Length: 604
Image (cartoon, rainbow, N blue to C red; front, top):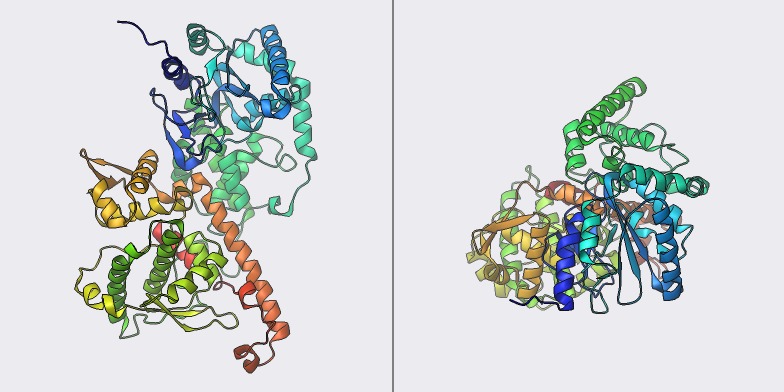
């Protein structure tokens, strides 16, 4: 039997032999846009099968450490000739340090150099070395080692965006030998010693960077029920302000103290530590042997608890740390509350409206516009169930946070929805002052009989849960369908979600890659209940995006109220505004807890 010596076969063999040994964890990211981006939602398990699309392995593991340095010399920075000169200089230097390396080249003239390490090194140590090398070599792209969450790179054999593959610059047997017998700790120490001056320079540069207002944090964390955005980012990314924290030890202690102050338990932190939800925090412990990391974490946790007990005495005023954020906001009157005798009839009406929505959904094509309008309707339905009333009074910005859309886009969709023939929503009253538009959920006459005859759907209607901001609207609809009816096949999901078979197939692939669903037999799918949507949202950094959007809208609401106080003097003026009344620019969300806040905490 003759062996296949084609370039594709050689690439597949190189991938299967080297990718698992070089990767920081057995995960890869696929690029479906021709190698332009490698989004987190397209992350998959690393297998020995050569991917069809350009694929990059994750550089850092769940513990925030890496097993190799990935040096990317980019020909787009200064041309191919400069890349070759930099690589030759690097090779001479590595040889002088006693190091061994693997090298490949891209079809566009770029070069990758991999330095396997016997002992895994922390994110901060690896970043220091790569940034120091970046000061020596102009064409070296330092960014893969500057991002703990998203650092990734193509390895030998990976398909390239211009066609072809990453091709080894040496024999596969030699490269495999280097990967199996990586550089010792002595070689790593020699590399760091030779770069000591450059490492000191890059660290000093971090100290010189000015602080922005959003990076400043109170000296002592407050018991507020949530960690600050800054602390969450430190736990995720492993990056911290060198002016504030002198070392990884101080940074990790700050994160743990903030977590304890936010009311978290040690077991919750340990789960995030071990499952890779907080790789930044894990990277701060990478210098310890694996069996010493959890005991060290527990010791630091106890120190955080002791600190809080000593420095945070009884507080006056309202303490919301233990108050449920799903409690009714005091700024929104609830129509049809339990004291209202019509509450049960309203819920029956809303469930019939949901049936009408499911009957109408085929009219909304699986285009981006159609999917967005379906999600806006779901957000209105979720708001109606929360208030036990078919009348919904939430501003565009509240719906925007609940759907992951921009508020101007939400306004456009609402105008289109209420302008339909036999609409599902009707505008009852336009917003005035700090109040949003008042909508009524309407069951069209043409659908009333069919909607009332259908069996009510189980479960509650969801707006866009935060994790699906990253995974996409099609994945949200597929997941929702499996929640309501476990064990659906792909064909049944296409029929139930009204999505194309391609969209359903890609969504199933994305959800399965993050262990959110699994196969139940050969053809059907079920939800994996043990996978937390909230922890995945933290891992994706979506919680940060939601918090930023809420903060921006709160500021706009303050501006709006300020405008009202200066320009509106009477009720008549409020009801009959002048031409310069900026409704579209300043309509704000309800106070404090918006629809999205409640949907986030209830739906995850």
